[in-house]
Image 1 (cartoon, rainbow over the protein chains, first blue to last red):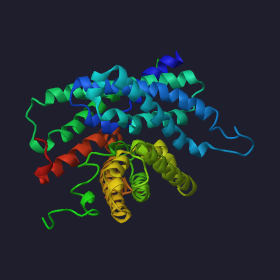
Image 2 (tube, chains in turn yellow, cyan):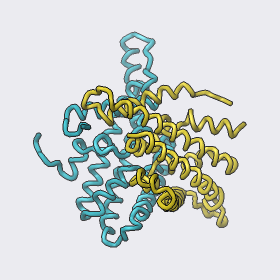
Image 3 (cartoon, each protein chain N blue to C red):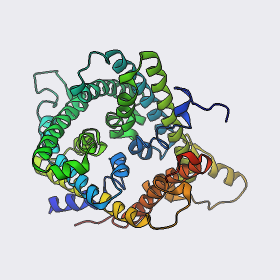
Image 4 (cartoon, chains in turn yellow, cyan):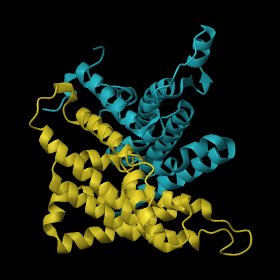
Length: 198
Length: 209
């Protein structure tokens, strides 16, 4: 039950886009068509799901104060450790996708390496560190929930943008401006989920 | 228009602003702007990190192998961010608590990677320093504008100093309500959308076709 609660909470209430603004850059850049948006969302979910448990383990062992002996506190190194793990895993994912899913690789193109510097991934790890989960299961569930929340958000905005391209929008508002305002309205809608307890 | 081609330093401040024109570094620009103080600290932190990272990468630009440049950039930036985070924890603990993870997220701020890739790797250290300062301050300006609106309308204060309620009370009225909407995340998105709208209306070159 705790797991389910955390899962639902990380999708709807602590949504990465609408509540925490994580990964906005790729969210804005890759949301022109639903297909690529879903592909990127799936990639982000997958990378989150792999990196968060790894970073959780590192945070609980190597980075814990006193792990290497009395008085040695390496917790200030957490940023550099997390980003190194993420960069390495993204590199592996990129190679796997290039080898086995060339079509997806073609459509994601430049954005796959950019997952390494997607704030959603590092942000997931940092929030995981801040939330101090009891065991690795919570970290994995949190990763899955956050990833699905992100996927959900980018798929929605891509669908809206596909429709918007047929509507008459004032020229200065076209593209970026209307996307921001649409995202803001979606964020208001997501507020209605706040307070859900399972 | 006074000048046709904006300079390395002044360009990013407005006409080529990293946030609203280049669309980089939106994440933290929205999250830390509920109040002005954290927004200001965040702007200064990012400017420092960006300026130093630009100079370091620019000095190393001929020795970094092309294939591993992203990792090198990430390590340089992460080291700088760790320093900034330790300084904030030591001298501005309250603000560092409010900023929470967003200081760490400077590492993955797209402005950093964007400027390092696009500018520092191909230019000498001095222009790189100017570029870093210009882009950092351009980011800080947008943060400051959004934070001013959100704090003034959302909490009725500026830098934590009570503005509206004091004014209303002295005039003998009571029952003033702050607009809670401005504190919510969605307000930041809509405000930024409006800033972009204004900027593009002023400068038609930036409009989407």
